[in-house]
Image 1 (cartoon, rainbow, N blue to C red):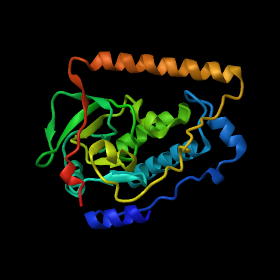
Image 2: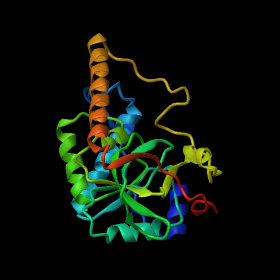
Image 3: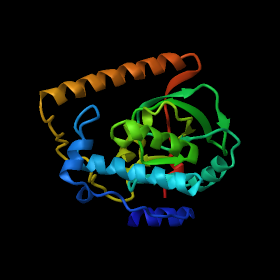
Length: 252
């Protein structure tokens, strides 16, 4: 929180903190009811993270205006404030704009819209990871909340990436990375950071029983098939790209 306050103050971006859902807020029965509907059993902290994002989506819908949603380890480009101003005034229909890259390829439209010098906006058709920095519009919040009524909780980024009804876009080059990605982009992390969601040993909870295990495997296979179909459907207008950053825009 201290890091984000300092960063946003320096970038002159006003901030509003939303209370996160804590694992202490999730009763054991609620955890078992909600943690077993994805491709593997969610850790308590992963479920809490998803519910925290969901609360942010509700906030966006209730306020009726777009907001930049940040996780606590998001490192922002110095151009972020200028980009946000331009994004909020665009005449395009936007539900969701991802500012982040995580050193993985994304399926992006071959065409682009100019934002500010050196940055553009591209239609985002398929992403894989990343929910640390994104602009959500009320229309997008409504779609996500509607989906959350019948879709089980998942990793927050997975839920976003597979919401294909979202009119999603990508800032290109990216204007945000997570602190754990600094080394991949030649940056020195401004602060040390240890994830409270993924433990250092990365041990995942085991399925309660064999039936749940089979359900997890089935859901994963189905998700991979949907992803493949999605990529085939956009292959004529999209290309699979690594989203870079402008390194100097992140340096002190």
